[in-house]
Amino acid sequence: MKILGLDICGDTIVGDAMSRGISGGEKKRLTIGATILISLLQPTPETFDLFDDIILMDEGKIVYNGPKSDVQEFFEYCGFKCPPRKGLADFLLEVLSQKDQAQYWFHRDQPHSYVSTDKFIAAFKEFHAGQRLNEELYAPFKITEDHKNALS
Image 1 (cartoon, rainbow, N blue to C red):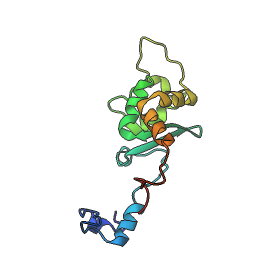
Image 2 (image 1 turned 90 degrees about the vertical axis):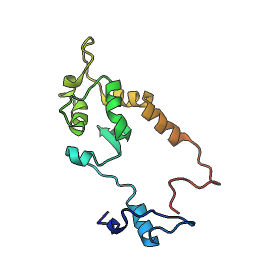
Image 3 (image 1 turned 30 degrees about the vertical axis):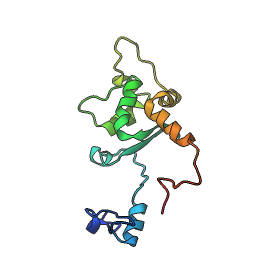
Image 4 (image 1 turned 135 degrees about the vertical axis):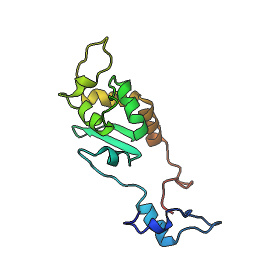
């Protein structure tokens, strides 16, 4: 917020036609600062905790795209559990690795076999976050209505 000059209005409402809020210039900078895409190879747990949404890629393909709050549930759905003292970011990097994946398999009654990137992608399409994303992407856009994510 400080980089965008928004630290002075951090506790101020944005405002609209009926109520006064931040200035026009601050609104423009707020819009710029709303979505940030960042690529991190080995994020620290503190950095990882700052994000709301994750796009997890492996072999150049998107394995998971959605809320950070659902990513652990997705990998449990696939049969992998993050140990209590393991950082989620490290777990995500290692569970996609053929070398490290087996240690996170939690279906002890079933033998582990490597889950490939393509299998994770197929599982994500079946997972509730993947289905929700698919519905959003394929919903027709009505040109006569204002879009919730459009700039004003």
